[in-house]
Amino acid sequence: MREVPFADLDVDEIDIPAFLLPEPEHVEDAPEPAVVLPPSGTGIRRDKRRQRRRESTRRTTRLVLLAVTVVAIVVLLLAHPWRTGAPAAQHHPAGATRNAPLPSSAVLVQKDAQGGAVSITLLVANPATGGGHVVFVPPATMTEIPSFGLDGAGKALSLGGPAVLQTTLENLLGVPLPPALVVGDPQITSYVQAAGALNVDVPTRVEQVDAAGNVNVLWDAGPGSLSPGDVPRFLSARGQGNDLGRLARHQAFWTAWLSKIAHDPSLAAGLPPDLARVVRPLAAGAVSYQTLPVQAVDGGSGGDEVYQVRQADLDQLMGQLLPGVSTDRIRVQVLNGTGAIGSTRNVTARLVPAGAHVVLSGNADSFAYAQTQIVFYDRSQQQAAERVRQALGTGRLVLSRQPLDVVDVTVVIGRDFNG
Image (cartoon, rainbow, N blue to C red):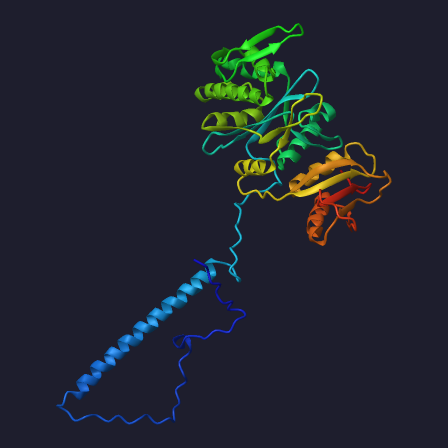
C-alpha cells in the first residue's frame, strides 16, 4: 500500500476542526431568543426533548470520532520523523564506533622461520553470554601494507615488524585492534601444554612431498590425538591443496582446545593475561568459526596462492563482530612527502578510527612538502576530506582539477604532521 505523506504542520495551512477552536466570547448585551413553549398535555415538549437528546448524542459521537482521527495523525507524525514520505533514518546502537579497539578481542599471530606470519587468528568473545567468534585471516590475503604497497597480509610482519602488521590488519578490517600477540612455535606449545593431548577431528589428510618426491603422511583424515608439541606444525603445515584447507585444520584445533578449557578454565592460567581474558569467556559458550571472506585470484607465474577480499562479505562479517558499525569508509591514498620513515604507517593508524580505508600508498613527487595536503576531487567529497584533516590534526584542503575515481581523498604528508 502506497504511503501518503502527511502535511507539514510548520508549512502547510490546514483547516482546524471546529471543536478544537476556542469557545466564542459571550456578548453581554446580546438578547437571548425567545422560547415559545407549546401547550401542555400534547406531548410535543417530550418529543422535542427526545429529539434534542438524539441530536446531542450524534453530535458527541461525531466529535469523538474526529478527535480520535486527529490524535492518530499526531501520533503518526511524532512516531515517523519524515516530511516527504521518505523512510526514517536508522539509528545504530550506541558504542558501534571505530574509535576504540574491537571489544573483548585478541589477535594471535604465529610467525614462521622467515619472520612472516604463517597464521593470523582474531578472537572475539562475548563476556555476557560466553562464546563468540574465531576468525582466520589467510596470510596470503592481498591488502595494502602501508609504505610497502599491495602484498599478502602475512608479509607485513617480515617487511616492517609487528607495528606494520598491526596497522595492516586494522586497515584491512576497518577497526582498531588490541596489540597483536606474535609468537613462535615454543610459545604455542607452552600455551597448550597444560591441556595435554587434544582429541582433534582432522578434516582432510595432510601430506607433504620432500625434495626426492617422497610423500609423507603427517595426519590422516578423521579423529586423532594431537600432542602439545605437534600443535605448531599442525597449524603451519601447508600440505597438498588450497591453503584455505589448512585453516579448516585450525578450526579442529581451536574446537578441541576450547572444549578442554570449558571443562577446566584453570588450563588458561598459563596464557598471557590479555589472551586469557578472551579465551576463558570464548570457551564458555557457542563459538562461530569463520574464515575471512576471500576468493582465490591468479598469483602469476610464481605459483603462490593469492586471495582477494570480498569487501561486501567482509563488511557483513564486521557488522557481526561490531553490531551497528557503518560500512561506509573513505577511500584514501597516502603519499609520503617528507621521506620520514614510518610516517605512512602513522597516518594510516590515525585514519582507520576516522572511518578511512587506505587503498594506496607510496612516495610523493617530492620530499620537500612543508604542509600536509589533503586533496579531494569533487565538491561532494569535501566533507570526507575535512574528516581526514580532523583525524590528522593538520593539513590544507585542496580541490584537484583532475578527477581520480579509485580514491576519494589523497593525503600528501608534510613536515607539519606530527605522527
